Image (cartoon, rainbow, N blue to C red; front, top):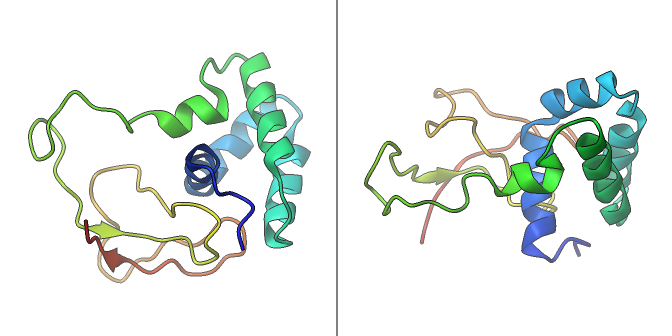
Length: 135
């Protein structure tokens, strides 16, 4: 059973897992990397880490990142483009979270990784296999 039932929490965890190296780099500049390590350890132990998400968000905001974790996790979720139109193409594969903690790995582009390459979970290192998206 996941502690992260809210859409915001699951989207934020998906953002953290997909962008862990960049978040780690930003937190390193603020001497706050231990917060990220605590978050990942809490997730590995299936513990509620909502407070740690809040702390990381606040640290990033204090460090000059206007969006913080929660804002970045929402970027791209709202669009003025109708589906199938505009600069983005529909991606018909998804990379679901192997532990069911978040919405899964989010590619940095609209293209999935090349054949044979698979992202790994930032929390527990499990391989994340793609699945065909079914609306």
